[in-house]
Image 1 (tube, rainbow, N blue to C red):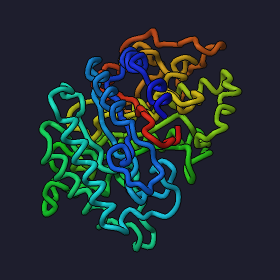
Image 2 (image 1 turned 60 degrees about the vertical axis):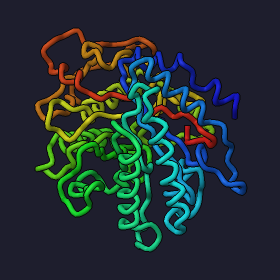
Image 3 (image 1 turned 180 degrees about the vertical axis):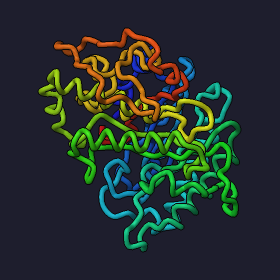
Length: 382
C-alpha cells in the first residue's frame, strides 16, 4: 500500500490536471484513514498522502473537495464504501458517531491556514442508498446525519462549505432541505448538493444514444434553473463519465479495444454534451459545475479516464479554452447533437473548432473539475 500511495498519484498528475484547464479535484477518503478498529480489515497510513495531495493542489491553485466515501457499516453495501453487503451504517449509533468524528477531524485539519484555503468543501457521505422498504436506512436517518454533520463541519472550521449527496432522489427533492436550520425551507448558504449522473449502471445502461443525449439535455435545463423552478440554488455534478454500458472492473482494460473513429466521434459528442449540461452559463443558476470520475485508472479505461480521453483526442486538451470545443450550444443550453463532426482518423489527434460566435464564452464560468480518486486503503472502483 505504501508503494501504491507513493506512486499512483504524483505532483505530475496535479500539474497535468491544471494544464488541462481544470481547477478542482475531489478526493474520496474512507473513514479508516482516520479511525480504524483492530478487527476491521483496513490498512492505515494514507493520511500523510492526503495532506500531500492537498498541498500540491494548493501550490497549483487547484481547489479540493474531500469526500467521505465510506463509513462504518457501509452506507450503500457496495465496494466503493469499503464493504460489500448489507447497509449497516444506521443500525449502530457508534457507526454514526465515528463518522461524525471523522468529519470533525477533516474539518479541523484542512481548515488550517497551512493549506492556503485550498480545501473548499467537505462532503458528508458519498452515495447513500436508502431502503425501499423504509426500515434499513431511512430518509429521516439520513437527514439527521446531514444536519449533525453540517453542524460539525461549519462549527469546526472557517471558510469550509458542506456538500451532501442527493441519495439518488434527484436535486428537486432537496429544494426545501436546510441542514443548518431544519425548521426553515429556505436553503442555507455554504451548502452544496451533489448529484451523480451516470449512464453506466442499470437501469440507465445500454440506452440508445439519442435517449442518453435527451436525458443529459433534461438535467441541463434543470441545473440551469433557479430555486423558484424547484432546484436547490447550489448543485454540483460530483461524478460523471463517458461510459454507457459497463462499470469498470478487473478486466476493463479490454474496454479500450476498438476505439474506432465512430466510437471516438460518439465519445466527443458525449463529453461535450455533458460539459455543456453541467456547466453554469451565468449567475443565478443552480449549477456550480462538475467533477469527472476520474483522472486516471489502473488500466486507463477509455470511458473512465480523463487523461486517456485527452491522449486519444476525444476530450479537449484544455477544457477552459472554448476554441478547443467542436459542438455549438443551442439556446436551451444543450449541444447541437446534429452538428456535422467526425473524429480524426488517427487516435490522439485533436479536432478543435475554428469558428467564432457559437456561444462558448460562458464555459469560462464552469467549475470544471476532476473526480480525483486517491486510493486510501481500499480499491474504490478505479
